[in-house]
Structures are given as C-alpha cells and as structure tokens.
Image (cartoon, rainbow, N blue to C red):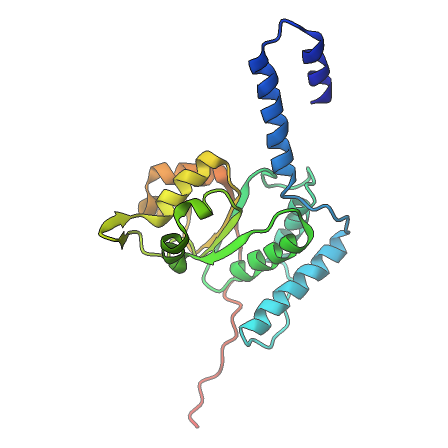
Length: 234
C-alpha cells in the first residue's frame, strides 16, 4: 500500500479519484484489522482463556460440569486461534464472520460465545450478542440502524419469527438486517441448527447468497453435550 501511494504521488497524471480510492482502500484495511487481537498470546494461553470463558457460561446456566476440549471441538478451537491472531494458516476467511452449525446441544453456542467474550476483552472491537427470538423486539426498540454496522452475534439463527408487525407494518427482521449489513460490510457471527439449504427456504436465495459471502459456515460435529438428569421415581 505504501509503495503504491508513493507511485501515485510521483505521477501527476493520476486522477484525484484514484487517490481517493486508495485512501478508501487503506481505511477498509484498517477496519478489517480492527477485528483482530492486539495482544500476543500463544495457542495454549488462548485455549486456556477460552476454556475459562466457556466454564463461566456453563456456571451462568447453573451447569456444574467442566468444559471439555476433545476431538470434536479441538480442531475448531485451533482454527479460532488462527482466526483471532489473523494467522494465514487459518482455513477460514479471515475477513469474514463465522456461522457455527450443528446438531442441537453439540456446543456451538457456548464455543462461539466463549470466543466472542474473549475477543471482546482482547481485541479492538466489541460484538453485540443477541438471541434470534429477541432480535425483532430489540430492532423495534432501538431501530434497525442501531444494528446495521456494529459487529453482532445472532444465536439460534432460523428460530425467530420470519415476520412481525410493527404499528401495522409487516417487517422481516433478519432479512432486512442482513440486507443492510451486507451493503455496510458489517462483521456478523451466528449459530444455527440448520444448513444453508434450510436457511434459504426460510430467508430466500437473495439472503442466503449474502450470508455465504458474509460468513464462513463451520460445522461443529458431535452429539449433544448437555447434562441429562436421570428420571427418578421418588
């Protein structure tokens, strides 16, 4: 970028529009870098922090069990570390958001929330965390513009009502929000129990195509991790 800028300054034939375009490009690069960590940490440090944040979420849910890293979530945690540190070894698009999909109870929400809590603490950006079922009410209260550009995590995407009424007007919260966020280039995270084909039926091909560009779909394998209390007769 610096070399190109110097070339532009030496060449009087280059238009002002080109200079403005370079400035906008540099601003966009700075914007993308702002999502990444400014704290140097090893993978072991990152993993231990992530476990602590996941454990905190479990305790908030009154679940008194240890958060376990295993063959199902271990490789994803390693990729999250690469993603967090902007490492080119990451298998995911470093400049896009993430959507974790998988079976009910497989641990995708805890993993995503633990990562975002860690990221909120150690990066330059804070991500707003909402559940899909509360999104429509929050948008009514604060307006869709409030959620248009800020980084956001939507838990349980596809579980919300597809349409709601606002003073007699029918609105489609997620569809309208994703359309605006796509144009703004906003960072979006989500979890879902559905694949893209199911989400397309719910939201339309128009929104699916934007989701695929805005987020990397990561499948979280494994069965339910939720604690099952035994049925007692007395």
